[in-house]
Length: 427
Image: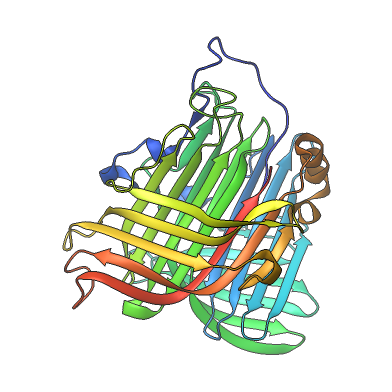
C-alpha cells in the first residue's frame, strides 16, 4: 500500500536543470536486473527524519478470499514514530470485507534472540526463520490480535525455487534516489520482494476458527524522503494462479511529482516500474522500465515493465480520472539457464465504470487512515485528498514462453488466476 514521506525542500544546485531523480529502473542492463535478496535487505531499518517503512504480506486463500497483513513504521521529524498493523480480508463471493488498523504499543526490533527481520509489539509478533539449503529456506510466523473479534496466525514460507529479489545486486540494488547529489540524496524509494510464497494458518473471527491456506507474495518497502511527497501516482499488481505448478506476476510502479526528473524541477512525472514473473513455481524473469514524460515508450524492446490505464472515467466520489481498464505488461530474458530466451506477458483487467466497479474492494481515503501527525502535514503541503483504489478480480495472464520453461508448453499460454491491484492517486 502506498504511503508518504515529508515536507520541506532543500537547497538548489548550481545547475537547476541537472537531474534530480535517479530511477533504479534505468541503472541496470537486462542481464543485471536480478539482485537476489541478502539477509540485511529485509531487516527493519526504522529510519528517522521523514520516512515510511512497511512490510506487507498479500495472500489469496483457498476459498477465494484476499488477505493483506501490513506493518507500517512512520517517522515524522522529531515526533516519536507511529507503528500500525493493518489487515484487510475480502471475500468476492460473499462481498464480506473486514478492515482493521491499529496503532501498536511497545514495538521492538529485533526481539530478544532474533535479528531485525523479526519484530514484535504488544499486539503482534512476526518471527523470521531461516533454513538454508532446504526446499523452503525462509519463512515468517505471523501472530496478531487485531481486536476481540479478529486474530490471525500464519506461517508464510518462500520456496527455494523463487528467491527474493530487488532490481540490481549489492547494497544500492532496489534504490531510486531523489536529489541532485547521489552521495547525499534528498530521499529514496526501495522495494524488495518475495514473488511467491505459501501461507497456512488460522483466522479466528468472533470466536470461530477457520483453517486457511493459499499462495501470495511479500514486499518490504521504504520511502525515505526529506522534501515533499515521493509520488503523484502508484500502480500495484499481484496476479496468482495455481496452474502449471504455481504462477505469479507482480508489478510496482510509482510516478514522481513534477519536482523530480532528469532536468530538475518541472521535468517530473517520471514513472518507475519494477516487476517479476514466476512460472511453474520458479522465478523466471525480473523486469524494470522507466517512462520519461518527454519520450514515448517503444512497442517492443528487450525489457518491458509497465502499467497503463487504457480507459478512464471521471469518478465524482474522488474527483480523479480513474481507470476502467488497465493493461499490465512484463517482458524480459529468462533467468533459467535450462530455458533461455525471452518472455512476454500481458494482463488486461476490465474494472468497469465508477458507478458499477467490478471487484472493487474499497476506495481508501488515505488521509483517514494514516497517522494524525502525517495527515496534518500532508494535507497542508499537498492540498489534495489522496485515494487508493483496490480491486480483486478473476484474470488471465497471457505469456509467451521459451521452450523448456514449462513442461509440454511452447509459444503462448493462457494462465487463469486472480488479480489484486491498486491504483493510487495522491495529487
